Image 1 (cartoon, helix red, strand yellow):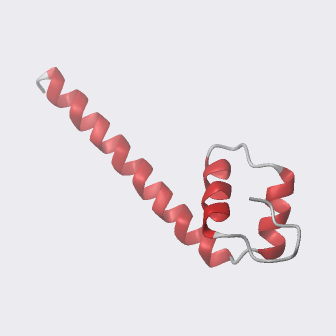
Image 2: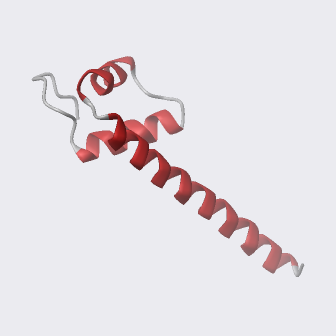
Image 3: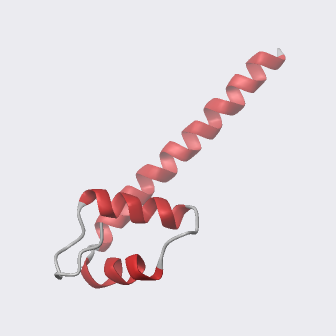
Length: 71
C-alpha cells in the first residue's frame, strides 16, 4: 500500500486512505504519501462515494428497525 518510489497511490491505496481517514485512524506516513503523490479529485470522489454508502446504510437500518417495530 505504501509507495516509496514516488508513484501515485493505487485506487486500493486511495480507498484505504479514505476509509482510514473516515474513521479517524489515518497514519502520518500514509497521510504524507497522499498529500505528496495523490490527486485530490480521487480522494474527493471516493470520499463522496463512501459517505453516500454510509448514509444509505444508516437510512436502511433505520427503515428496518421501524418496520420491525411496527411503526
